[in-house]
Length: 358
Image 1: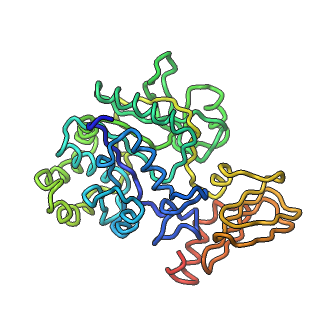
Image 2 (image 1 turned 180 degrees about the vertical axis):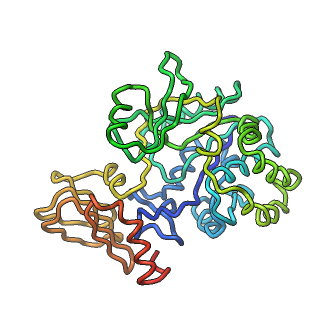
Image 3 (image 1 turned 45 degrees about the vertical axis):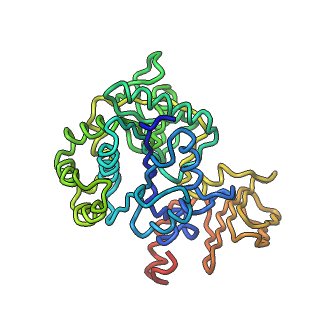
């Protein structure tokens, strides 16, 4: 385990498509969504700690989730938290982390990973990270992990790569969520991967990329060079972070850089972005029903996704392909085919019942 290895876990999202379980005050990354006994954040931390020293794992999150992170990750100290005072997408957050790591170790190589993804084959995942770290330590490249697509999914971005015999392949282009026709063509070509949003690079390479593509943002964060990893860091971030441009690392850096490479991987990845994606990872009965936490009796029902409070007894009769979710004093019943409307439902719930439920 190298002292030059670092990780940044992105844990600031709200996950509104998992409402009513995921709320502004308690987002999905802090929940045990699959009934494993650990939250998604805890699973992500433990997975990365198998290859990265625990003290080198940083958690990027909103200021209001500080207590939740420290409660769930007992091995994490306050100086490992990157507390965002304002929502500014992923580019400012990643630059902040890179500057913080660079201050303590200019030879640092970092992985940026979401806190809410599911990895089935952790051994293969670790091997992929080690291979990526080695490549980024030796070359001035920006890497991403590309998931071998199993279907023409229109909910993911795609990575077009140069099809050669190298394990790590040069990226030609990124494509945001295509329509079904284009996604099918991508799949048939064998030259496209799903973009999982997992990145690896040396701190030197990513800061150089910011210097080229987002120089104003780099200049802003360079003003804090003398305070990173000191007691004055929080004050600097509080006063300056919201001045950064609101832009993702994908659009701010990856779309423009010419030294982008991808490692094709297949380790049982799921982004757990929707109730249906959670359904895909759960065990099902003979009628393709899945449930989390509760004890459910299904009668003349098929293809349902049920999530309820622990040990609650539930009877579902005559329903097919529905999402049924209970949390505290909220009950959601929604056809699976309409789950893309849950974000809109959350907005309507806020308007009708107030902020407390969302």
